[in-house]
Length: 366
Ligand code: NAD
Image (cartoon, rainbow, N blue to C red):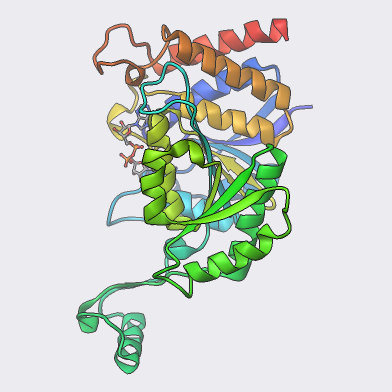
């Protein structure tokens, strides 16, 4: 049987890292029927939209996607396509494992943290009001009426933070189910509930209720500022973190930094009916078409996809192949080297080829 998977190559360096990942995934022997679909800045002119309906339809049909990074212009232009895909398909759980790799320059060893970020609510929900808009005027009246502490409500933009019972219950349940499945010991919920009592406080209230259903897994809570400090000082104390959207976004980059950076940080966006696998990093547009960037994060996202499909043996082999190639350090991209202009660095394609060859060799001995 071949798995039908929607393939979005993405913008900038996306096609380089996605092609590299396809090479490695196919080397495992698992059969795929790729369904290539357009999305992103580059296809705007041709399709009149960065996210054509056919791409969403394909994802709904295949229920699994492998996606390269997509560019979002800052401040102007269209809203994030990544956020739109997550919203359209209700991919509510963002999974970002952060693991130390031998051979990667980083501040710490033995980090093994999994960040579970809520993907649909919070300040990311896009409930924003421009200065002078009707919504902003309504909020200005509310602020005046309630005597809230806003310096200049007449000339202010507003963004609404929403934390719901359903949204919180399902993300915390996801974190505990993940912990149970992968034999993790602890889930830590992270918020700023001391200040945002009605939103983050509510997140804790719901999380505590869910935690009671998992007596085999330890549950604790930390404030987001304290968590940042502890992550830098004693990262080994953390196991699975579960967070509302914005804190999850920030802390998953922090955790990626602890293990060696975006080049090795994989991710997945998972919902009830569909899952999309993508690296944490963006489209790194300045390296576009240069066969330069590190394919590891995208390949490890492919490994997460194999696990999601139940192809555990293939996933273990592919992950081991990545670990060995990175540890050997002879077929790795520039960012693994102490100097960016190291002449011994190889390109994206060459590193993927070395990993694919390693997969094939490991398969023989498996
Ligand atoms: P970025 O992740 O593209 O780049 C940040 C830094 O990391 C740059 O120095 C870049 O060269 C480096 N980097 C990124 N990926 C790398 C890799 N695989 N190997 C080696 N180095 C790598 O972040 P950015 O510059 O803030 O964003 C660029 C674009 O990507 C923006 O339009 C942003 O919106 C978009 N973006 C998309 C996604 C996504 O599709 N999921 C995620 C983040 C950012």
